[in-house]
Amino acid sequence: MALQLHLQNNLLLLILVIISAAGPRTSESARIFTIVNNCKETLWPAVTPGDNFNGGGFVLKPGQSKVFTAPVGWVGRIWARTGCNFDKNGNGSCQTGACGSSLKCTASGKAPASLAEFTLAALDFYDVSLVDGFNVPVVVTPINGKGNCSIAGCDSDLRSSCPDELAVKANGKIIACRSACDVFNADEYCCRGVYGNPVTCKATFYSSKFKQACPKAYSYAYDDPTSIFTCSGTDYVISFCSSRNQTVCTYHNNQLHCSGSRGLNSLITSWLIIMLVAFSMLS
Image 1 (cartoon, rainbow, N blue to C red):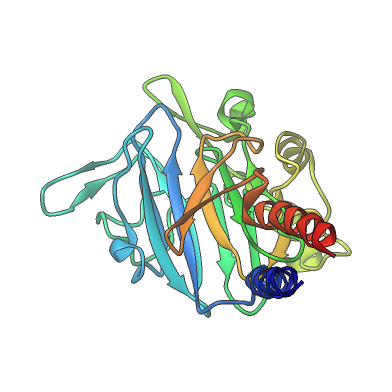
Image 2: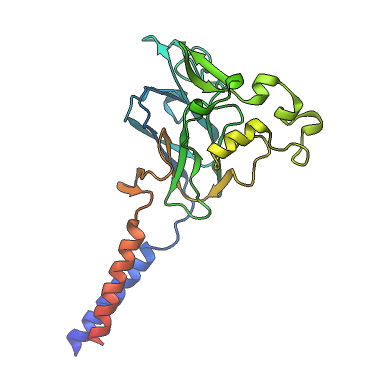
């Protein structure tokens, strides 16, 4: 009887420890950003402000990734530059997304560029914007967060369906798709003047084409309801040229966490069930 009571007490203690470990994940002081290049071409990702991201610019060959940590309070954007050529001093030029002539970005990129935008707080806000046009597909996947935490972004390649009047070409190939505002500079497309509010600024023919291809990305300035997402205590994987359904992973506290997987909480639940069954057998 004493042995049975001892086993019961130990099982109860272990269950309480595991329940405590599996409790709600609170907002932490930093977010881990994993930036992945799944494109067939080399990219030069850019970040502003870039103090926590290798000074704001770096190179990623196909299949490569880099990991960074940004503090809560960071408000910034991440995008890809294409067709770049930098010398050993980090000076050069890019076909799309250029931020001046430096590898390290200290200013916003030149349109057109697909933008991943973040506001990190107790509750993070994030989105992918095509308001300034499109150059490569980009998807933002939050991992291990609490809240809405939807996958944002555009995994369609709009270059293949870009209207001729918006197309940016190099050597006969479409390398980017400009926004209608950038091309026509009209209030209707730029959501300014009498169109400078969500009541009068509506989707246009061009923004609707973007939205149809990329329903989880901003297609024009007031495209908020289906385009901006919230999540707390999460890490982010920013993947270029990836499917929204593709599994992506990040390391947090020396553990691998992946999207779409059962993860640690499911494992803990399984252990709880096993121990509760064992406890009932000892009763």
